[in-house]
Length: 140
Image (cartoon, rainbow, N blue to C red):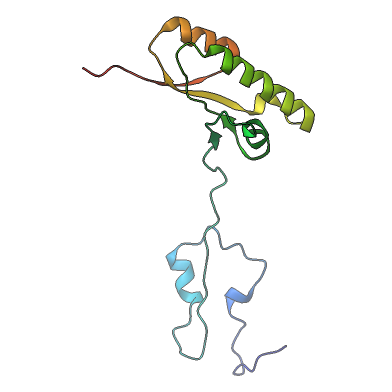
């Protein structure tokens, strides 16, 4: 549908659909915006960043591993003293779930919260595949 335009007036540059607007700065945008009441203004939206925050689920519920594999970037349970076996079982459950849906287990990040500052515990968790640790330090 053609618009009525005064003779000799060119098509406004903001109607050029081929032009990329992501990298425009204010000097380029100003000429595209009409300040006349009869025209609508151009709205330039910045593209979302390509990287998003990682989503780690910190649960040990019955459906936890299904949710981690389906929706998340990793698993982040709370460490309880003497419960290393629970974490080993959790890693095994994640591995089985990844294989069943075709997701790479290596795509998941494993982190723990509340790790006591004990090297032996940390070494066991590294052997299980955990790479991020939130230490629980004693208060003085």
